[in-house]
Length: 487
Image (cartoon, rainbow, N blue to C red; front, side):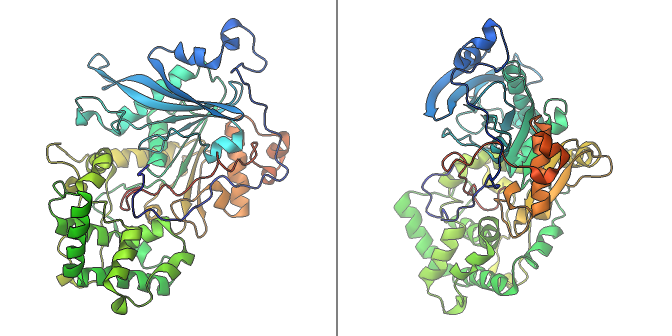
């Protein structure tokens, strides 16, 4: 989503590459959106006509893709679902249409929606349609003027509920909610508030910060992740960047001036510099693999200033805590500081004299003109609900992803719900990366929830395969590289 940022890693993690050997034949696409086996004038209408017949739905554009129709749409939503008469806004949606007789996957990344055709892993597994929703208050899906008090997890879940109710009469088969990272959180919150809407939930790498002030799980994670050699390399570069603060901040000031960057929101270049440096270790494990440790300077003390700068910039990104870097993520930081919570970790290998601010709270990354107040009950409520009431829910985490240190767990009250960890994987963890037994079970449950499990899978979960063949363009997914200390 953040285009052309200098710190974008070349790391690509392939998602949706479950073996397609022996896969069931994918259902043929319906070029005009007809429903297989359904009669009636409405069912035989062109799919676009049916979509535009939904009150409040409008077309932005249609883009061609073989075997599908892909639409970018706007949908009129209330700013406040409790008081629908108090204003509306346009929320952006994309639709990858295959056939109204196939199941539908409801995806959100929790941020902006991409307008390029793509297929999430569950969509490939069930060979279905995909509805993708932009999260409220991410531009252009932002009310004007913006009443920030209406940006909360219940209002966002209600956005999804209204979209589902609007499209269910067209896409009448089973629905699966999914999302990665903040999108995985979003899918979980949707299920908590509207548990009767979806037939299943697949939440990838979803953090669960139940007690915002207790973050020791993250500290423990960073003493165990990867190998000692790799941890030592990363810690040394991070410390060295603070030891060399003066010359590197001069470089930072010149870099900011050359690019027109400013620091009004965070307060100063010095604060921004430390924030970038302290994100370095976290950012490496979030987006890189253990094999990438070879790219980290082996001896930080003897590395040049440029080598330290380049390593930090590649992983954390010196453009990030500028006003220009923060502005697109104001909605996220607002939510982190009002409901979601945010981690705070410590740096025992860095002497206190080199640390001036430590991990800064979300309040520092949101303009002061926007009021914020933290609700300590929101995440506790969701966590309790998942533990005791989860039904048809699958949580997938990466072994080396920091965000998985505080995760969702299912308790004895949950039914047909699972928490799996992909060995060696980072923030791009997926079903394809799970150990063989868990991979087959996860795919089998998704197929079953979607109502498309072949008889062979019902008899033996190890027979589960994606129903759609891998498509190099549609299914290629990078780890969604955003700002570091952000899910």
